[in-house]
Structures are given as C-alpha cells and as structure tokens.
Length: 224
Image (cartoon, rainbow, N blue to C red; front, side, top):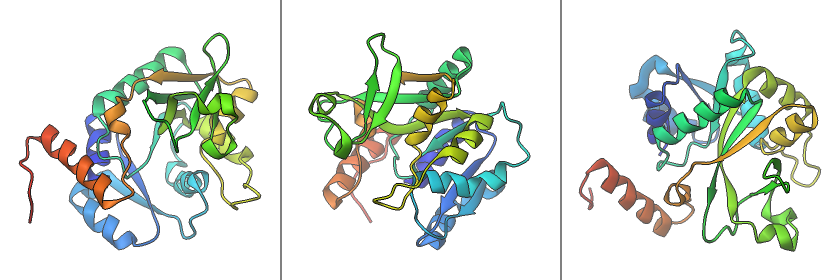
C-alpha cells in the first residue's frame, strides 16, 4: 500500500518523500527499501495523532524554504493517482494558497470528515463525523486526507495545533481552519474520484481495493 503512495508522489514530481514510521516500522522500511535515498524516514515513537506525525517529520524539512509546497498524505491509500496530486498542486500554485485540500463527493460519507463550505462555496472547516451536526452529516463532500501546504504556513499551523483533551492527540485536520483564521487562503478542489477513497479496515475491503489496484496495473488476480 505505502509503495503505491510513494510511486504516485514521485510520478507527480516530488523531489523526495518522508515516511513517518512507528509501530512495526521494520516492515514499512523493508517495503520502501527499493526506493533508496528517494525516501527518508521520520520516527513517531508515540502515536499521538496525524498532526503529531507531521510534526515528527518537520526536522527533516528544516533546510527547505517557506514557500516550497509539501504534500501530506496517508500511507494506506494505494488507489491514489499521480494525476490527482498534480491537479491538487496546480490549484495550490494558481491560487497562492496557504493550504489546498483535494476532496471527494461520495454516495455514503459515513465515517469521513465532512468539508464545510460557506454560502459562497468557500472552505470553512473540516468537521469529523462524531462532532457534526445533523445538517453537516448530510454533506457528501468528504476529506480523504489529500493536503498540499506552503511549508512556512504548515510550520506556523503546527505551532498552534492544540492537543485534543479527550483523545490526547493532535490532528492535521485542524490546520486548514487555523490558517484560515489567521488570514491565510485555503482552497478545496473536488478532485478525488470516489473509487479512490475506499478504505481498508477489513480483509473484505482489502480484497476489493486489491482487485481495483490489480485491474489498473493490468495484473491478473489470484494469488500466491
């Protein structure tokens, strides 16, 4: 799964990829070893949320300028497409945004964070299902965790992310709203095909995603 994400990033033109690793990291490192020095590793010793995971990677970007664009992606979405990342990056650059999100409109948004927009269609916030109002639960535009940040704004956003008092975690989903409140521009583009949002939490879901992935790669199913 993670190798497919790295492939998409490199194909989209990323200069390097940083994989944040923690539990069973030996397996992730082994899977990414064929990429050589194109992939670096940042260790998240404690799993304290997605925002904390990004924070763990920031020292490896210390020498990069503030205006460089940075993707933040999940490592378990093998149906990601390089063309989606290029579309995301193009919108980010064209609008000179602090953060740009690629969203997806899906038939059943259950379990996903919803994209809340204002009356003019502008981004307001990401609301997780557990915190959504009945009206927000009716939103079908979801956040599949495709982000592009201006690095300097990502740094500033991370400084202001607070630890959730209930879970003890820090969330990357808070940063776009933080940047917006600070006067930054946050863009959202409906660019992720619904099929690509499929998650893998059960063996049955793994089989579905594997079948789609093999079809795209032109690989026959079945297996050793």
